[in-house]
Image (cartoon, rainbow, N blue to C red; front, side, top):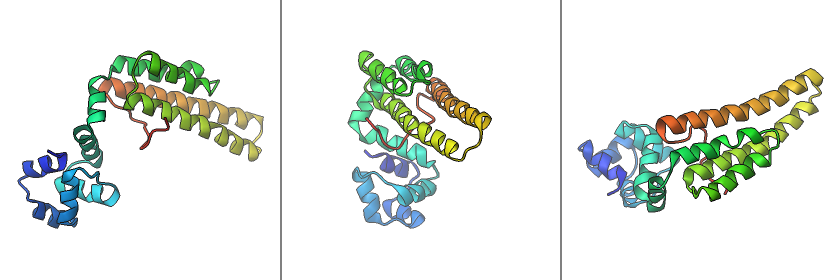
Length: 184
């Protein structure tokens, strides 16, 4: 049973009632209950009509509907995921290594799951954006002191992301900073 149908039935709503309160057609609701993922506006109005958070609705849909992700969640060792996440910190000053070390650990520790891929994807994105930000900072010719401050802020931003994700893995078994897609 889809999560939308489950929540709708818990709230004692028919598809027609949900369609009326959300402004979404009954046919769209039927498609979502059959397995189509709601996105954008549809996701927002359904979550509002059902009085749940969008992110909760989306996460529940993924957990219930995608057997591959559901299987991965069973085999996730959160201690190892945290190690993969924290392994980027010693390599922050050498940006390619902050991707390679977690990637190697992901394979060695046999944690090829959604969380590990998200951790590496965030590091890939940071590795792309950090030099661009630095170059833009230098292009503005702020002077040597401000250039040094920009470099330190770029590095500290990655440390913050890594540590904040590690804390979120401990608390809620998920990532706080993640992308809506995987780069690997």
